[in-house]
Image (tube, rainbow, N blue to C red; front, side, top):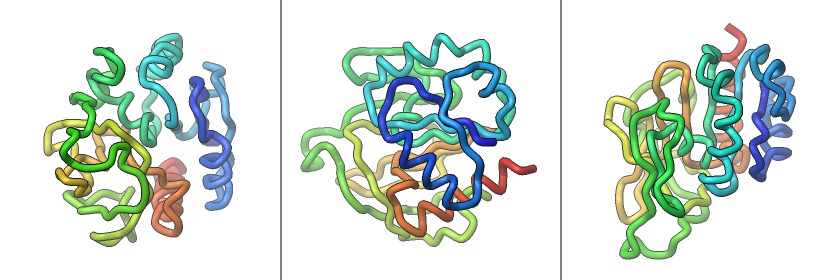
Length: 197
């Protein structure tokens, strides 16, 4: 069973449906026992960093000790960082050392919204079957800055920003796999396979 953690953000149903489509059993929950017993966990993400981290902090005793695969999507990936500058300066979960910052005005239209391509920086099982240059779907104004050792993919939007990260059991994508067609479904299928080990 894959647990999608409900911490007051949107887009939960579409992620759940996508996981079910690739053959997974899924539950949307904020129950600590359910999260602890899950074979994998997803931190979803359409919403504000401050609201999400405040809700997640009530579960820190549980989520800090998870050893199963954890997938952060969009805001969910940003929550992995050390801190975020969205709406002030807020501490993140610090699972992946880094900082969440806003796109500079000169890149063009913000938020970055729509289809864009992936530049694969590192091989990973989560990217099995994904080709360099594959298109995925983004909706965001902020992105994570982190060390190259944690970077799976980058994407060009005036700057090369980090669009995928991995550290141990933590995997994050700035784009929305559940909205990214066959490429996104393949990534979720890979995550499901990883979770069954």
